[in-house]
Length: 281
Image (cartoon, rainbow, N blue to C red):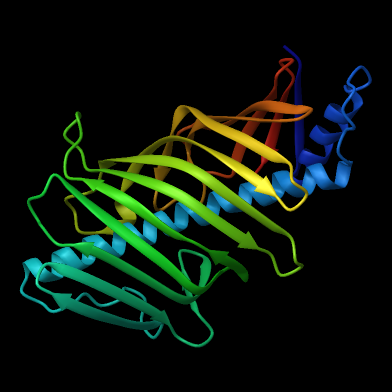
């Protein structure tokens, strides 16, 4: 197996990937995509990964904080981020509607800028095995990218391992400030393996599995499947372990996040066995 060590940014590394893939298409009858287009699509998809994961964190934290507040006979929870926005609660018997309006200028949450409004609805039943959390994004921006979608997360009180689990049905569209656009559809399953009894969200640990497709403004599509569960430690900016297999025309390989260390290092292995060390943005 050939190994190459590249101490470069993720964007430059992906440029090398694209050059390799387009160079291997001499015998193909399909017109290869341009180098610039392929690079942009890979970078866009990695940014959607970050948006989807951060939204899941936020929705789950909203729900858990509200449940904790009601168990203490409080009307509603308070945002953990002072001067960032307001929380409005509508109660109709067991129905709950939580609206979070971020203040003008937005709110920085774990290093990301949130702007606009998130509305979460569900039927409250603290002892139910399953609760469906539905959310809508209204004029919502994540790090200056417009994120559009109405999605759901199925919360299971206890899975086969005895842990809380969340199944996220994803259907998001992201529009970049420069006009680029991409959408994602799929299903992501989170098992909450540590920290769920502490009451402190930043010490939580999730294992993530699932699959999704990403479609770009050019019409091209990427497919993704998590082949080794991703370990998401909320206090870490990137996944600390696990692998994703990704495939598109003239492009395929496995992104591996390492051995559990909280860092910005990963490897990408092409289908021919060539491995690249990469630095995540």
